[in-house]
Length: 213
Image 1 (tube, rainbow, N blue to C red):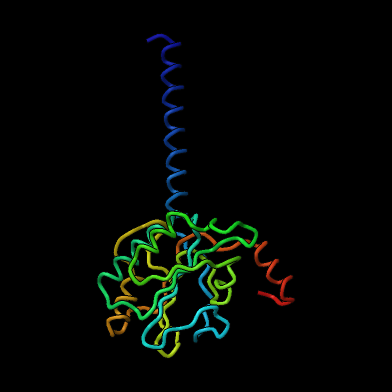
Image 2: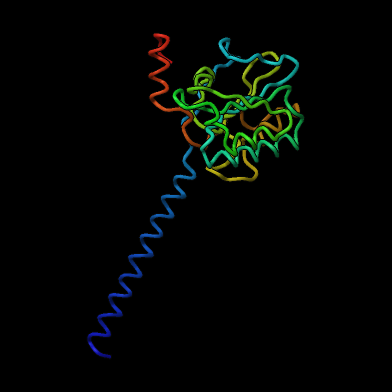
């Protein structure tokens, strides 16, 4: 074999090895991102008095927060559908969909809104500037809260096991147990999704009412 051909093969092998290492590193980064939860909610132990919508006192109330452009949250909607198919439905279900304070009406009406609205019993509402997310202490799209008929917090967490991942997971299992009148293995789980609102929304809210959000 000539020296030139040998050198070409060595360079080809080195290039292939470099490509494989780069692809492997990229895949590891993607897997790490998918498995990294977002900031957990700072949910109050009882229904917040300054919520913009009334709590139904006839049974448990589920509140879900969504960013309409978060691809991870499509799995959350699918898991909610599975939950509602397998467990007694809460008295009320609210899906609050974020819209930036400076965006035009309708900005939030993506396929995620439509998917949530298609589920029976789900009331979809616009959360301008993430105001209600802050009232309830939610930070991440997919954050799910369940309150009892008396207003006590029963569950806070996500209902997927990773970003955009569908399938059995501790959050859905816990909610199914609670709604079925059983004791759950956990009352809180990690949340996987995008941040609900921007820092500019927080600053605008603080400037508007003179208080910290």
